[in-house]
Amino acid sequence: AHADVDGGEFESPVIAVTVNPVAGPLIGLSARSLSFAADQGGPNPATQAVTVTNVGSGSLDWVATDGQAWLAESPASGSLAPSASQVVTVSVDIAGLAPGTYAGTVSITAAGASNSPQAVAVTLVISPPTSIVLGSPAPRFIAALGGPNPYTQNLPFGQTGQMPRAWTVSSSAAWLRVGPLAGVLQPPFGNTLALDVDVAGLAAGSYSATLTITVPGAA
Image 1: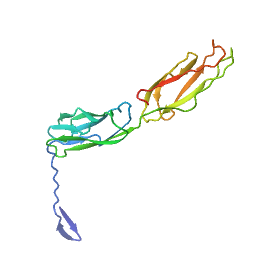
Image 2 (image 1 turned 60 degrees about the vertical axis):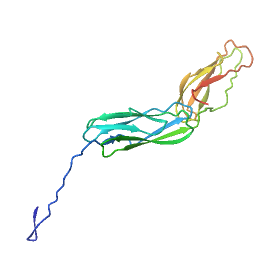
Image 3 (image 1 turned 90 degrees about the vertical axis):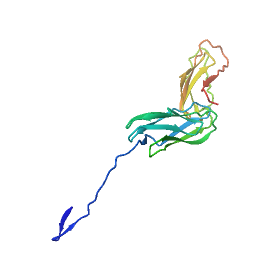
Image 4 (image 1 turned 120 degrees about the vertical axis):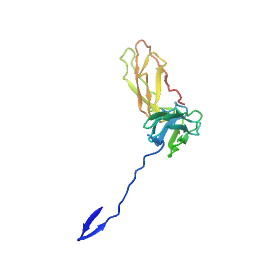
């Protein structure tokens, strides 16, 4: 380089920059952490995915390990050409686990990769078993013999857990109608049943019926 300053001259030093190409395979990950949540005794949470990419040159022969009985990956190994990717499904199995927070790590290793291993932190939170809770006392209906049916009453209900659960409901008596008959349970009182009584054909007296709400895995 050459420059003129105040009539004088000087030679600036030459600065050289060299960029070397990446040699060998490198591990690239689409995520560095995953979080799962479930209720004890309930279903396993949905699986999640991490994409492994060969961001270097040469073949990337990778292996996934975790060291936790409740954690699994599929596939657990593979081989990737440069720029190629593989989706790895990460799943958890909550069977036998007590309520609490669990931590694990999915490690991706590859021989010949200078950035091996790469890690994905996994957190699993298990809440206590869910229970069905009613938002109001059992409804009571009063009707006159031969008169019209009483007004519809609503019964709010929900759960103590945090995860959505499928539910169904049934009535023990033909004169007590309920709807809807199925849905997804929401905390704490995110569901409502509409109760109707049909007094046609009923003699004077007191009647009782039972509503049965069924939620698999609920206490």
